[in-house]
Amino acid sequence: MPTFSILDLAHIIQGATPADALGNSLDLAQHAERWGYCRYWLAEHHNMTGIASAATAVVIGHVAAGTKTIRVGAGGIMLPNHSPMVIAEQFGTLEALFPGRIDLGLGRAPGTDQRTLRALRRDSNSAESFPQDVLELQALLGPVRSGQSVQAVPGAGTNVPIWILGSSTFGAQLAAMLGLAYAFASHFAPDALLTALKVYRGAFKPSDRLAQPLAMVGVNVVVAETDAEARRLFTSAQQSFASLVRGTRGQLPPPIDDIEAFWSPAEKAQASRMLSYSAIGTPETVRRQLALIIEQTAADELMVVSAIYDHAARLRSYELLAGLRTSLDSE
Image 1 (cartoon, rainbow, N blue to C red):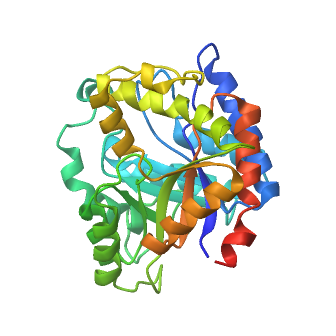
Image 2 (cartoon, rainbow, N blue to C red; image 1 turned 180 degrees about the vertical axis):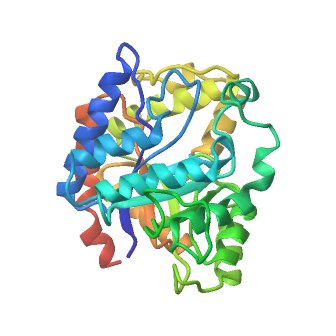
């Protein structure tokens, strides 16, 4: 049975501040630790008014300092935005501060638009060197070799676990070739999920990091006392994705009673496709939906995303979800 983990985008809800979002992230992580979640990941996005985790390593340190046992990491660091040396130093430092608790998920996309990419002082073609940058980063986090003149301090010898993130077969092929864990972004880009998992598992080569494939699948989950309430809470995510389709960005909106009045048929079709890997409803409804996803994907781990406007409702959703693992174990 897959373990459950959390991907937190540190959503800034309408009417709130980044400080509010980061405080809620820590509070959720502390609850998640008590409820038995495996990992708590944060994602790098830039120039987005609704996401507070741009300085991802800093936020990971904030969450790790306020928790004790849950693994904390990046889902992910967009490596084209950084030199491998800087990331090795950042995550080596996190590992030194919180030993045995840090994960490093790596993405190939910039996590932003071209204008912001220039503001980050990165080349628009930097993603082309992603495989080489991953290898360089692995080496910097690995044991120091004889004659090595450049070391990440802290970083060298920490062997921080690396995950390759992706939404296509490119990342699957790279993760398989390098013998690394693989996480698919099916919570917003599900189209190639099953193909990518097949490629990853079929081509996987054992490494000193990983003896067998380890696949994580992203899924949107909202659990509430009634199906109707869960569907209503989910309208915050649906509005956000419809706005993305429109080419607009903003803070996470409150739920609405009639999502059909909000979006056009074309927006509904596109947003719904992006959100197709979702489980929404009561615990029993979500249990059935997750059982189907697990059967379809054979995922080793589910990375859960819950873009819920009300923090108390978000906590309750994750609490109810945590209680489902026992029943899913018996499927």
